[in-house]
Length: 250
Ligand SMILES: O=C(O)CCCC[C@@H]1SC[C@@H]2NC(=O)N[C@@H]21
Image 1 (cartoon, rainbow, N blue to C red):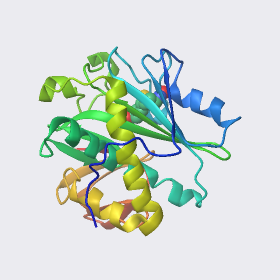
Image 2: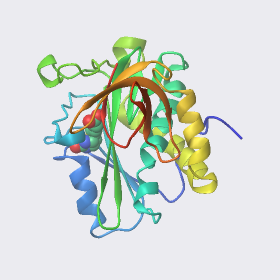
Image 3: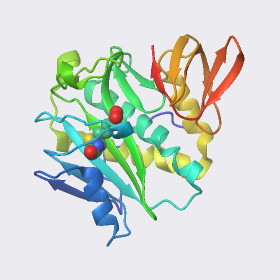
Image 4: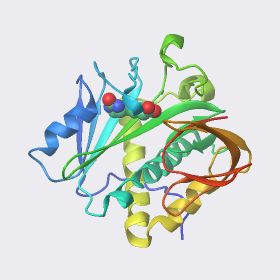
């Protein structure tokens, strides 16, 4: 089995739209989904009302990457949610292809990509009645201002600043879409197993002490693994904890 994708051809049957400006590519995906049933990447060069996870605003300085993959998966909801791992691996491979380096990149549970320990990309999954929207924001050239970053959050970094790589968003999408198609085919053919293994091989802070903040409490423990359902498994003083959703702090 290949462990990473290196193809560079746009996936067959997947559409591509590049908008000069939009409120949010997530909102655009929801609008498009009402009258369409085929997968497509919706990219915007500027967003006026972008949002991140937990409804947080997502700032998008010019030159950064913003796109949403609109797709129509048919699996049960719990499996659909595992697409965040597919997207993380696709991002990782695209970064490696663009920079020629794997060592500075790592994946942070549940769905961020780190570069030299800082957050370079975030992923947001939203589901509609029949569609899944996978939103991806990447700090290609700029980072959000300090006032936009939550206290204690992983500090944002940009690809350009950390690696010197300068790439236009449209060109990055030409790497990302084939990478996503590769990991998507692994997922739909073999299930979560190979995706989980590949994700764990690239995981940040595996085996080390981390903090996971859920809606109700904060848990401290050793990041033991991600289970077969995508949950974070923490080894705490009180025993093993399986956490489906949380913010992780290092
Ligand atoms: O880390 C996060 O909180 C996820 C950030 C996701 C941001 C992207 S940018 C493209 C798409 N459009 C949005 O409004 N949000 C996502």
